[in-house]
Length: 262
Image (tube, rainbow, N blue to C red; front, side, top):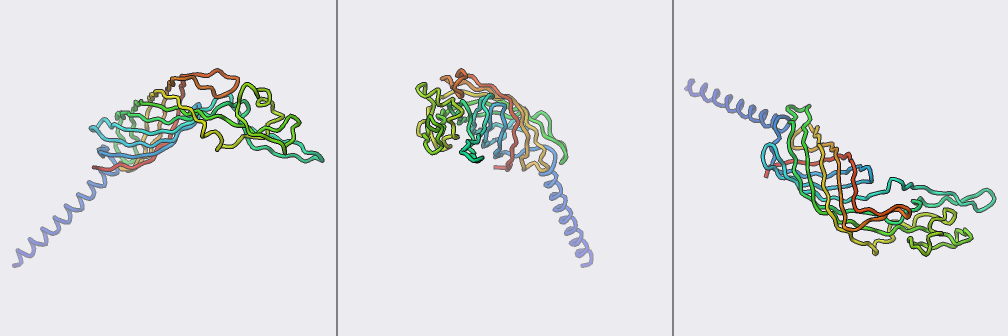
């Protein structure tokens, strides 16, 4: 009986020790070492040399080295010469009216909705919880350019702030549209959405992604790279600038998300 009791206690201690070792092994797998999770979802934002981008990404692991992913993006491109400003309109006796901010000489807002498929290739694993996982990325797909007229709130020819009209650019009102003395401000973000025109195209991207998250099931990454887009019709953003079909930029982005097994 004593032997059986001792043997039972020994067996329970061994089982408890095995459970403890399994927990430690699982925690180390989550915290450090190879990242082998089969699914991942993340969202993020990028600052481009010609605007900004917000995106959602869904990834499927192919093997220990490659992850295939789909990405949905929404962006806005800005001309490097555009400048957002406001002005003070004097009304007499030392008083003035501060106008709403506007972009002088702007003709159109140019937005893009993009859908693409890409692949992430592991260059270097993080090795331990304090390491950084480095991946090369290549990605491409279709782009839908959305051209929205830019509206200005213009005063009448006498510069009376109480007599105004909200207008978009046309050759017939070019002189008024580019007359700073008549500009009261931007016409408002809501103006022009019912006048969108579609400009389809293609896009491609190359870059590197650096993931510093302590746990493998978490995505905390910085991405840098270059992006190219081509549209079927030339897009004109500023009145005095030529329209163009090809856009090229560099970017830096922040990405946060989660990984799991199917």
